[in-house]
Length: 378
Image 1 (tube, rainbow, N blue to C red):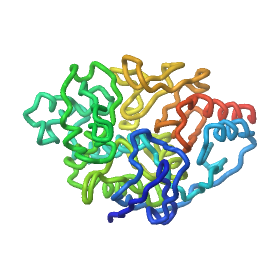
Image 2 (image 1 turned 90 degrees about the vertical axis):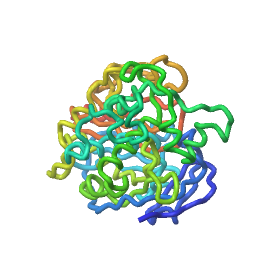
Image 3 (image 1 turned 90 degrees about the horizontal axis):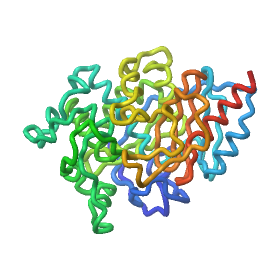
Image 4 (image 1 turned 30 degrees about the vertical axis):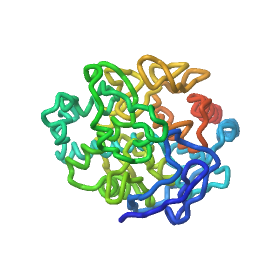
């Protein structure tokens, strides 16, 4: 099922319970590359079952204050088997579907693991050219899926020359997305240099569809979204009947971001049912060769970095952390400007946070405040 929606917004897209027809404008941009509208959208059908609600003696007021400071939309906390905090700001609510930005990458890589489990994909160490016909006989096709997922393809970035007609702008708008993704030149040997690029995640999405012979939204619904009891979500397509943007723009309810994190916390099991192989969750959350702070489409708290960069040369965008992580084994989804799902197995804890993009987002402030509250209440 496809949903078509086009409206000019002043900021990021928020989708309400009824989907795109009920879209509301946000007050600020949550993705610097985002076009001002999304059209068309593909339905990721869910099978909703509410998460259990509980209570906590912990005082989360400091965490709430941090979230409010950084222009929050929502904050949900799961602790020891239940949602113990659920709060919304800025005219949003439980049914608001905000721009997730790069948090979608962590969903995409989890879905790819189901394709390996079903033997649609042979191995994470298969060459990309096995699944991308344009690269079957191309040297770039020797890049492995692992290198692609760990942001170490060695491929050139999208050019920003030309303003709104640049490669970067056209990719962000979904224009010629496949041609731009496959048009990268090989700058360095694959696996040697960490360079976080949306086109790597898009390439992985093409592999998923080519290997499974299913539309991305349909596969996500069948393998993960409906089995974990999520409500309907939406992915943005590059064109009518086209491909989902697998580097960003998964529009899902805050509760469903939380439940997805719970499933990863529990090693691929949700409500007692195996959804994703435990070995795959271990694989994507362990340190990658080119960057120990990054796994495969998922970030890691260890080793601690006061300034976390998105490339090996430490230039451009950076996320600060004022203090070390209270749990150095946290792993997390990172969406531009503070879209986050933090997962701590040590504390049986998942924190899902959405909000307006803030370049000064402090990565450790929120999870540390939550963990401090939990430990103080023991």
